[in-house]
Amino acid sequence: AAALLATFAGTVSASALTVGFSQIGSESGWRAAETTVTQQQAKDRGVDLKFADAQQKQENQIKAVRGFIAQGVDAILIAPVVATGWDAVLKEAQEADIPVILLDRQIDAPDDLYLTAVTSDQVHEGKVAGDWLVGAVGDQECKVMELQGTTGSSPAINRKKGFEEAIAGHPNITIARSQTGDFTRTKGKEVMESFIKAENGGKDICAVYAHNDDMAVGAIQAMKEAGLKPGSDIKVVSIDAVPDIFLAMENGEANATVELTPNMAGPAFDALEAYLKDGTVPPKWIQTESKLYTASDDPKAVYESKKDLGY
Ligand code: GYE
Image (cartoon, rainbow, N blue to C red; front, side, top):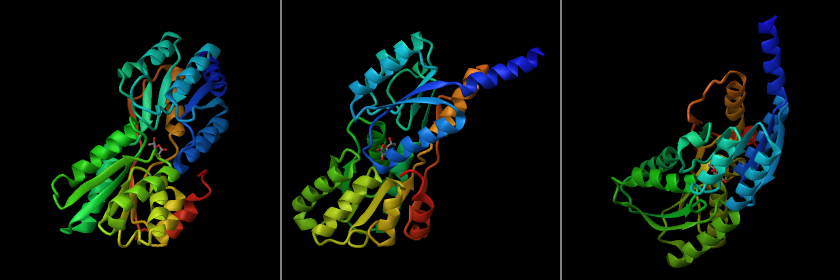
């Protein structure tokens, strides 16, 4: 009877969880999908999800987390906009005995301040993108324009690092210009317009490396408006694998992307439920897969398979 009661108690508490989620904002198609999937995952599991949109501001995230602590939630999910500045608020959560799980971005803080982080290997993503370009250009001289993600965010730092590692042994490939486009289409387009101007109308540009697909889509627009041919004259490689980049690939305007699953919440809730049920401690890093797609992977079919998934 005791065992039965224990099972029953476990089930009840797992299905009645209240979880706060501090989301960064809605800068990209990928981010929108992550929000949709997280809300769906919560619903499927009977989790009461308190959602807070930080509009790209860490101070809003910190306020939201303090609010969740004050409400006495069972756990907190944070997609941390930048990597630094989290120690104080995470200590407050720890003192209140509320487990925190990081989603999709890593932070610079002692790892005992959070239960686990569900993210991709962002250095590896940059490396995969860079390796693809190395293979695609061979010995040709190649001037690369880099569109960075949000300054100070772990994906911007690490995707830059991984790409630089990949091209390190290839002096024919150089990053000629590099600037943040904040992970948005609008900024990606704006920055690409300025790169095109600075680079002789774009004639000297060999490739664009964007830290996400949305900035690549913006850059593609800028290139087309300048009379350039993205995908053929200028190679385009980016990260996320959102549906729109597959449309661009299908049209011959983009060349390669590295897939990032929007389902970070599934593994996060699995880890949380196990932890709350019997104390199972998850690894500090739950790593999601990274898969390269190129134009030869039937982009139309991939687009169809993804377009209804919350992007
Ligand atoms: O690649 C980008 C976004 O944090 C890894 O954030 C994530 C990145 C994602 O907005 O599109």
